[in-house]
Amino acid sequence: MATNQPQKFSPYVLRQLCILSICRFAEPIAMTSIFPYLYYMIKSFGVPASDISYYAGITASSFSFSQFLTGIFWGRISDITGRKPVILVGLFGTMLTLLLFGFSTQLWMAICARSLSGLVNGNVGILRTVVAELVPERSLQPRAFSIMPLVWNVASVVGPMIGGALADPLKNHPEWFKGAEPAFFVKFPFALPSIVASLFFLIGLPIGFLFLDETLAEKKDRRDVGRNLGKKITRCIQGRKEHYKKIRDENSSLLPETPSEEGANVSVKAEPPKLKTTPPVTAALTFQSTMNLIYYTLLAMHSVTFDQLIPVFLSYPVQDPSEHRLPFKFAGGFGMSSAKVGTIFSTYGIFSMLLQFFFFPPMANRLGTLKCLRIVSLISPIAYFAVPFLVILPQNFQRPALYMIMSMKSLSGVFAFPCSTILLTNSSPSLRVLGTLNGIAVAVSAMGRALGPTLGGIVFSHGQKTGYLILPWWILSTLAMFSFLPTLVMVDKGMEENKNEEAAEDMVEALLAEPVPITVASSTYGSMEVAPCDVDSSNSSAVSKLPSRNISKE
Image (cartoon, rainbow, N blue to C red; front, side, top):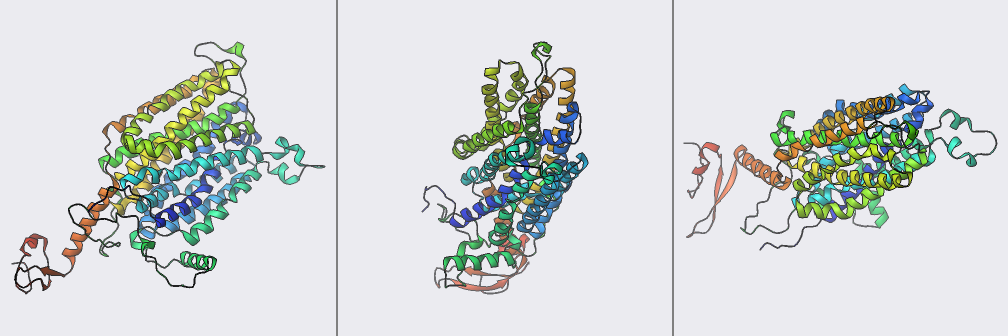
């Protein structure tokens, strides 16, 4: 008899999600640590002040443009070779390119380092795929899919702190040094934040290598040297004597423990039939998945553009109020230091983290994923529209108004990204193309993240030169409003439903592909075994209460 007890993560799934979070933690630190000092880094390359925002957009978007080129490739590779190898390659590549960025002494070096980082990393989509394979249940999806954004928000607190506090230590912390200035920091003033941020990869990489399990069904039984070593280390630490004990749920995701009310309890093998091949890329593109991809691309475009422009806006010199021609012609910024920008972004991250952990899962479960997405999609346009007017407010109102606008943006992003991820995952027509679909999502959203900061930087520079600061922010507001439209035709189909349908299809194909024994019930003699028979789809109804003989197509 079915129970109404709420489902919970199994211990195995919980462990794997924790390991996945540790692996993920270093990447957003690497990304967000550059925000506070990017303006000053580009300025140190000798770029004129009026062009800094333009080149800041180019530098930031080079990462996303490279991801656009390789996103589908990494998603496809993960569907063929497995999720774990692709994740580890992405982590290692990001660590190396982060160090290259920190040691850049010219603008072209910084842009190349960011481009290489995008080429070697497709982990955003792969991590979502792993979460979907670990947790297919709809009731658990809001909690599961909020974990990676929560990790991002926690890291977005740490990253700006590292970047803001450690960038250009000779200028920002002269008290640290006595006597002659160290030649290392004279030549590489922005290397220290990258060195410190890269240390987090030295934690995530070995943890992933030793303890992360493969979730791609076809590769679960493959020999994993790292995982075997990790099990030995675990046994040594725990002092176990049973070296070959097998835990039943080590290679299974969370499944209901009770049969359905109808009494149907069909056992499906974890591995699909060997005759299955990876479907083509086009199989991932249905109407619903395409609408979700369009929304996700526009969301990434306007959200990342805001995140790239706001630190430049905060660092930009203050314009003399006498030059303002209200209500629309005014420019300038806040003139903040990198340390102050880092503090604001850390506060922004803390607020996002609290929203992600305490408010998103219950609200998504109560209102539904799609309804939540539609509501929060209308908040960002309002926030973007109001941003430029911050500089004309009285000084004692500027900081509270800034935090209010960033809180609105945080609320929108915290809800929109996981909601979009859940809907995109559930729109996949098959688990076999889920990695490919998430790879496509990474690629197309990367193009949005590349075009957004680039065009935003150009328009921002033009707005500052002409005195119309409203120009970039109002264009961004219009784009955010336009992104709301695809949500009107979206539907929410649970991943568990997709998985059950696919399991049924696999079972039918397996039955049609090989001889199977059939048990025939007899009221007089009990049940008896019928010889294996070849079942043909055109004559499957012929299998009934027959004497023991070979059944073939008549």
